[in-house]
Length: 440
Image (tube, rainbow, N blue to C red):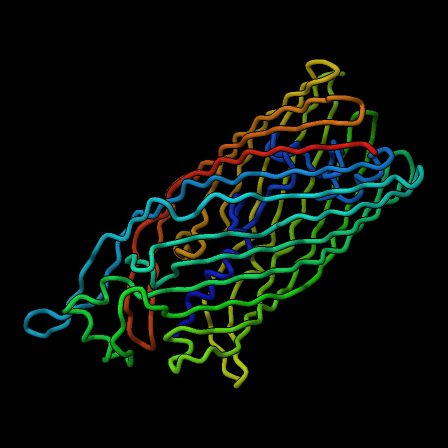
């Protein structure tokens, strides 16, 4: 059988999120959010800079703390239909199409962050970043027509990232860090309401399933894992006020281990162990920052993510059996951003930025679990200095999906197709962030 719901866990773990292409979570700090994260690998506003490029630690003075949070408020809906088999009055097999639209798929979430930096000398600096790069909670009513594809998904991840940086000279700096990632998740799928229809229920026996009530847990999976990767960074200041930054974050390989249950995973009612290996893809950024006047700074970024590493998802079980969950066939993607900062006075700076985030999946490979599409970002923000030591950054962003995002996906048991979804996912996302930075 196809363990389809496991792919939902992958979608959630990787991004859910997601506000960048694929499932990538871009929310590093509110200061960067205000300019759509343009120039992030080349700008050291506060200790959060190490989240993108550890080499930027050499541009921060003394010891600094930066803490914040970004509210993610999605407005995501499905518009589509479910086509499923049923028995005609003459007992021949027919197909019925019903509405499977849903207006509120993803609830609001808060993504927190914590950063600390310490400039040890003119050449050496270190820091610590604690944040969440991946996470999602999605919900459908237990008897929803599409609940068979997944009724509840909840993933939480935390990344602990110590970094170190070295200033080679006044122009060049190098940085490196270790990424320790913990992920915990739970996902379940339930029997949709249409299974109880009098002309549908008899078909269950034909595919080896017992009679079940709508809302019954069909399959579920919960598990967690620890894994690690690394990141590298460099900055070059060819002239005063001008910085070029380059950073690379390695892939992280997780192996979700936990319990599988539900009617299809554990028909005897006893949960069994299972695991699924997945690769969080590597990504890189080339950025530049240019102080054009004392008040005006212009920045830009080009981001690349190696989504082609996200390919076949295979579930494995202790008895040696395995199953191809899904062949996602993702492709590498690019993101382009331009932003600006303008200092109004000694206390206040305002920011703005736009970005274009390209999809990582072609139309024929898009799924309900990973409904990726092109995205446009529109951001604005401000920073206010209460004193020489204390600074507050605020930002808001609107993300709008670009173009059509058609989806055609089926749910199968053995060789039988129980449901076919045809439609698209539409929507937008609002982000609102606050960041408090303090020089110790």
